[in-house]
Image 1 (cartoon, rainbow, N blue to C red):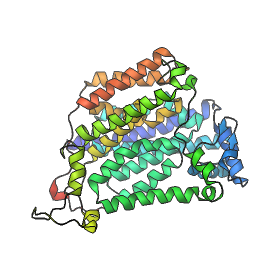
Image 2 (spheres, rainbow, N blue to C red):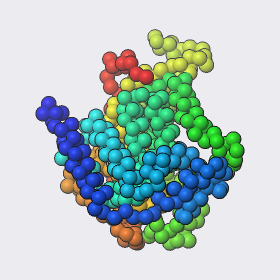
Image 3 (cartoon, rainbow, N blue to C red):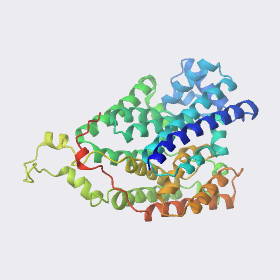
Image 4 (cartoon, rainbow, N blue to C red):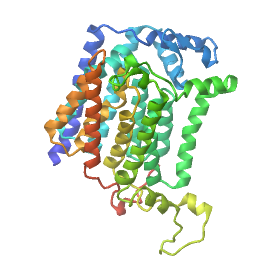
Length: 418
């Protein structure tokens, strides 16, 4: 076991080195594909030119639909690169390696994968393309999200929530992690500290959006946080097998949302809160007013807000499992997954597969099937239905998998955190 512990960081370092070489070769020799970069730069030009009305910030692919953090980050990139693609690719190459380093750190700390499976993390053609050849904002949002998750592993809640909110400000898909993150916060903190951490996240959004909220608040909120967008059927990777008239309908969107919420509740109750007796018992335990000797107390708002959970040191494997599975449920129920959206969950795929009780050969086959579907362009009836079925198989495997213990031993409960 000791040799394995030494081997993991060595393998991680080797993967980073090999992938850094591969990234360099891609940037130098593989032609850049023009998709959204020019639109990003046009939107940034409007912002830097003094425009604060979100309805007037547009590019050649349409209006700006991302929160304000997107504008600040891409304004900084433009100032460094002059709007040129090649230096921007170098920046995104660095971001790619940084993101991979964070992911490898998470994997070594959670100790779920065998050492050889770490290699799956740099085998994706599509992910390399999304970062270095497309320069999508998804890359930046997910890098920040993974950094926040690394902090959550050590229960640095406030700093994690600030970075999490920064990720949301670049792209809202990060909110798929919000429900499982809230559950973990309720397990690991008092209500007072939960409210404090959430306030930090909200403050980030207010400060970043302030120039737009003060001038054109309705335009900013409606465009930057539009939850009702209808995507184009042609670009859907996951539901191309659904007829287009159904795909764009409100009923289809409503049904997927209902299934999404139902699956979150089922997993939260029967899987993520199993140790506590279920979600309702977890919540009720936080409302109970009992003294150290078990005697009942009269209700006190201050005691209720300040009361710490009995076992508050969460195991890193449990944290990563809840976060990754919660996000994956959102992926399964997403009405449309475009090609760049693969970055939303690719880095969690090996973890999720090794949490299932499947044999390793089946895990590798499922991983390969997902990668195959994401590299078929344009997607078609068969590739999308295959991807959907593979997603369901993985979700089923996660449902029947043994549940890990969520807490460290009670003796560690006094360990200092943020």
